[in-house]
Image (cartoon, rainbow, N blue to C red; front, side, top):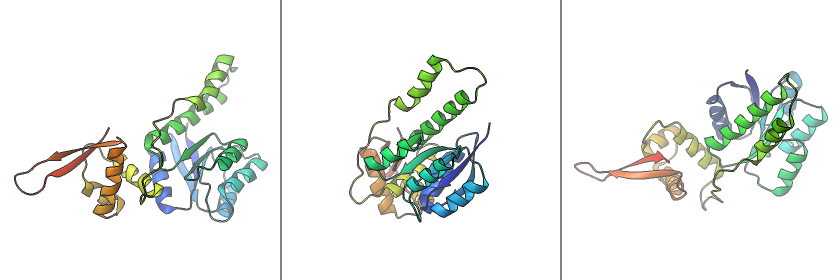
Length: 226
């Protein structure tokens, strides 16, 4: 089955990351993107999407206002919030409006993939023609209670969640060892900036670094995901 997704995100960089993450997962098509409340209302009035990825902070009204408006219309799509806003009130309102997951920036592909896989499992269970058993329902309910990845806490001063998410997306594209140059060419950032983020990720044990010495000059630092 193919699932059609609308991404509602007003930051072009984060939008690009979300799109690339989603396109790595088979069976999902990004059928629409927008960055404002009004455009999201227009698109959902014309099209029926299976899943919406919504940021809290969008142009016009908030993402929470969008969710309320969609639920008032009984719009059938599942909703996942992807945002840097970690306020309890926003989470509470989102959950009351029926979001199925709440992903805080910065996040890694593994956490994003986990959310999408849970969405697929819910859809397969709810679309099954067979009666749902109590055991299946209990398993369905437990999808939101699976152990979380290790919490990396707040990021260091001088680093931004959106740039960190972009750096991690660039790292996810590497097939093996990579260098600072490999990331700067993808992220279009300075070597100094990339080194700061790689040092942070190394401290958090997301990546590891080794030095390779040549015959002359400084050693080259190679990185690899753990």
